[in-house]
Amino acid sequence: MSARPACLVTGSAGFIGYHLTRRLLDEGWQVTGVDAFTDSYDPAEKLERAARLVRNPGYRHVAGDLVHLPLEPLLRGVEVVFHLAGRPGVRPSFDLEHQYQHDNVCATARLVDACRAGPSVRRLIYASSSSLYGDAPLPFREDLPPAPISPYGRTKLEAERCCLSAPPEELETVALRYFTVYGPGQRPDLALRRFAEAALRDQEIRVFGDGTQSRDFTFVEDIVAATYRAAEAPVAGLAINVGGGSRVNLLEVLAFLEELVQRKVRVRFEPAVRGDVRHTEADLTRARELLRFAPRVAFADGYAREVEWLRQRIGLNGGCRT
Image (cartoon, rainbow, N blue to C red; front, side, top):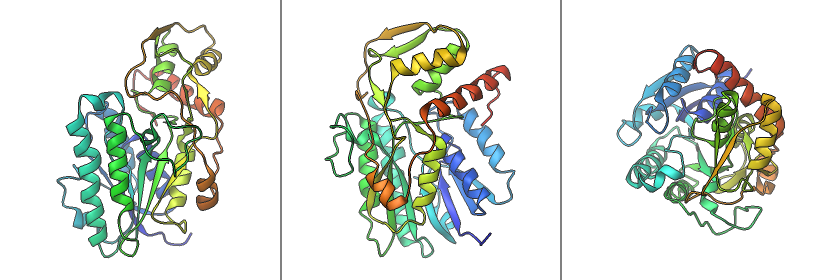
């Protein structure tokens, strides 16, 4: 295997960041990971993932907030930055706008400035979000005018624009607009994991809305594959969708979940909440042409893997295995 360059992964102890970091280490990269272990969800899961990563001799971990950390030493010798750090979640963003601005926008602006000044940094890959489209016509194309309907979506859009505005002669940037990522280790606040945990425990499942809303669910391994390809793809200064290739509505998810747990699930429908869009679907033309990417994991296979991971986790008295 040829020597790989050094890279920085922000949010390396997060759900996607952890899976990406493992892929990079497996491919021979020297990885510095940064994570602030924020309270956006249980930090214990992030700490467990970080503890697993530091066992690899190719990995170095730094704990801290990108708004306050000295960045020049972190970027010394780094060629590629994968910027996955940020505060996730649509619903909490209405009550924590200042925190979302700090974690998503201020941190990104400071990192971009440091990368532009860093002599070794060639490229920055930014983890953007489908939330910046709002309730746009389907499928979502990258040239559609952004219309986010939540503070979270607005901060992701502002951070994306900050990245893509960097002059390419100073810093090559690519923004990957992720569509609802799921799989083993998924965040505990997201619907697919909440549904599965409740079903496995034979508890009531809460669904916000009538269940006909749909998402372009993307398995984490596919997200990692696209993100990895973006490090070397001959493209800069663009946003690119990364989706799972099909839409699934929540009623279909619940029916499939019944097959996986082999019992009828109990569902309570509640009013839809602000900030939740009705449908998402990624146009993957750019991803296919520029990243040579196509999703490989069908929803049925990917969700079965997530449910099995949760089954093992619950059986281990809550120990997190990823």
